[in-house]
Structures are given as C-alpha cells and as structure tokens.
Length: 331
Ligand SMILES: Nc1ncnc2c1ncn2[C@@H]1O[C@H](COP(=O)(O)OP(=O)(O)OP(=O)(O)O)[C@@H](O)[C@H]1O
Ligand SMILES: [Mg+2]
Image (cartoon, rainbow, N blue to C red; front, side):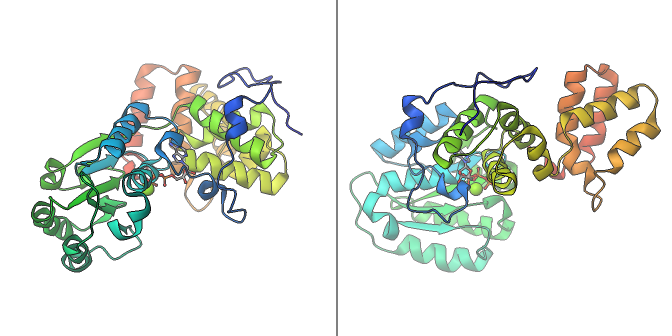
C-alpha cells in the first residue's frame, strides 16, 4: 500500500500526487534485472529518460539524431547523469554497432600513458564501417583521474584520428582536464538535480517497487541527497530494505547523517552561547572523525533557513573552504 498525498510536513518539497499519472504508469525500469541495485535497474537507457539538465540533454539528442559528434566533456557533481548521458548518446548514435564502435574506459582501468599509447591508439586505428556522419567513440569516464602525462599523450591522438574517432569525457571537475584537451572539446556542464526532479523519479520507483512511504520519508531522502540522484535512489533502496517503510526517522537512521532538526538545534545552541549543549548533541555523530564532511552541506542549508547573521555565515563558508574535499569547482 502506498501512503501518498497526506504530507503534514511544514516544508514540503513539492506537491505529492494522489493518483498515478499516465507517465508514471509507463515507467518500469529495467525489468530483466531484478537482482540489480536500483541505481542500475533504473539507469536510463535513452536520453529522453534522463532527468534534469534539459537544455544540455536536448543538445545531445540533436547530436544523436544528426551525427557528427564533437569531442565533448560533461562535467558536474556526482550522481546526476553524466556517465549515463554519454552511454545513452553512444547507444543512440551507433545502435547495433555500439560494441565495435565504442571503447569505454573508466577509473577502474589503468589509464596511464601506456593505455593511451596502446589501447586508445589501437582502437582509434581500428577500421569500423559506420554510416555517414557517425564516428567511433572513445568514452573516458572519470577523466579527471587520468594522469597529466596520459592527458598530454591524448592531444595528438585526438587530432590524428579526428576524422574517424571522437572522444567523450565525463568528470567532476573540468579544471582537472588539461587546457589543450579542453580546447579541443565542447564543454557541457551538468548541475545538481532539483528537489522536484528527484521527487518525481523517487515516486516513480516507489510505484514500480511497491515501496511503502510517507511524504516526509521522501523529503528526508531528498534533503540528504543534495541533488544527487544516485544517492537518493540508494538511500531509498537502503531504507526500504532495512525497514520496509520509508519514513522520516527511518531515512535518517539509514543515511548516517544528522537530521535537519538536530543540526538546527546545534546551530541554535551555538548562537545562544550554549556550546556544551551543541557539543553533546553533535557527539552522537562523531564516528571515525568523519563528522565535518557529513555535516557541512546540510549545516549550510540549515544556517540559511535559521537566518543566521551574514557575518557568521561568511565565517562558516571560510571554514568550509578550508576543507574542499567534498566540493566541486565546477558546481
Ligand atoms: N539525470 C538522471 N536521470 C535519471 N537517473 C539518474 C540521473 N542521474 C543519475 N541517475 C541515477 O544514478 C545512477 C548513476 O548515474 P551516473 O553514473 O550517470 O552518475 P554520474 O553523474 O556519472 O556520477 P559520477 O560523477 O559519480 O560518475 C544512474 O544509474 C541512475 O540510476
Ligand atoms: Mg560517472
């Protein structure tokens, strides 16, 4: 049974539908893959199923239809559809010739200079007959983890084989791609997904998977996902598997992240000068010294909502920028 349309939350992310829309009824995910994690089961296989970043996805759809793919870099934060978009694009462009026309390399492969000299060059030299306007595609996922030496070695390969082979890079930070490669590419920036985009997808998955939820449960997932669809779907599945019911409390039990109320109370205690109380509240979340990275983004959201004085907000941002491991220069 689904419990929808009865949100009692004071801050609903959007309106919850009371009945299945026609669109939701056609959403089925990958039905052949019951044992797959939901993030894979519901990975879009065509560009039109990708949620958000509409303008950029529309550009990709035009390229998929007309051909002549330029070298591209898709950059942006994790879990928002960069790899998925490139895979959909390659599939739509090459169809049944995908297997012979696409070389996929990701961070789990060795991508030092030897790979560029050997695998990439060999693939670029390989003869594959493709229709007019279609090119072989080399997908370099998580390209920002390629060594600068390997990136340098790519420059010439990209030029020499440009009449037959095009490159599609996905990365979190385009600034980590060397400038000569950036200048050979069209750079497409993806941004985090909005609350309503996440919500719509979560509701679709809940319907197909028969997930029991209350609106506050989905709002909690959206709060903790911070625009990351992968995180949202994983947290939905984890909460459903652990408790069989997606409620606000169950989500925060699974997410290992303090709830907005607790963070709000900590910030209020600090503002009232009651640091001991704030510390006691926070101690509960002190696991393996990872407190800062798990709290900084939700904390910033709460500081905004609580309406903290601008000077204090700026100090918080100063502290946050001292710990940049969790932030994305392109974001
Ligand atoms: N825009 C989206 N629309 C629909 N599903 C999405 C979208 N973005 C992410 N997902 C879901 O999250 C999963 C991971 O997406 P993807 O691999 O494309 O993320 P990414 O942007 O490449 O992340 P990373 O930077 O970590 O590599 C997908 O399998 C899909 O289930
Ligand atoms: Mg990716």
